[in-house]
Image (tube, rainbow, N blue to C red; front, side, top):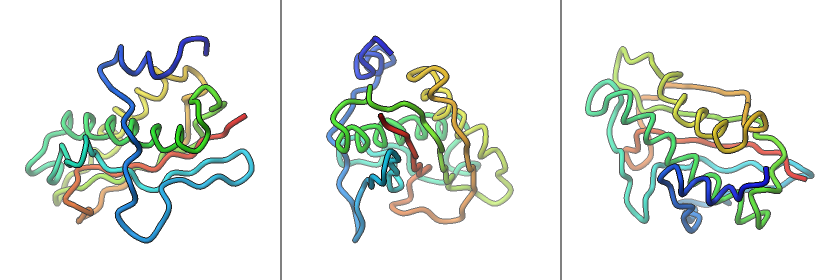
Length: 154
């Protein structure tokens, strides 16, 4: 990974933000050994949830995929805050995704593909990961998607 990942993000239309603060009694990221795990990240841009509502009702699949990408960018900001440079990531291990779903909506994997594809675009093979894709009935702050990342670091 010779290219700076933050430059690559900018080329893709994203800016790595200041890591969002925790909204409860928890920490945004934990390191244990060579493993980093983020808390659930919502589609915040600044202090605003940019995709609110349920997939299959107020929002369509592409909006959910766009929300998932923003969640990943926020998760990457959390990882950077813990390790200083995203180039220290050797492998994205796991993506856990929760999709705010209307009754009958079953395309959670397609929504989370937005996040998975962004990680592979940024990290190449090191961005390939295991994944959980769950539909849930209610979401904090009415967010469309919530994502947690697990990453191995050097």
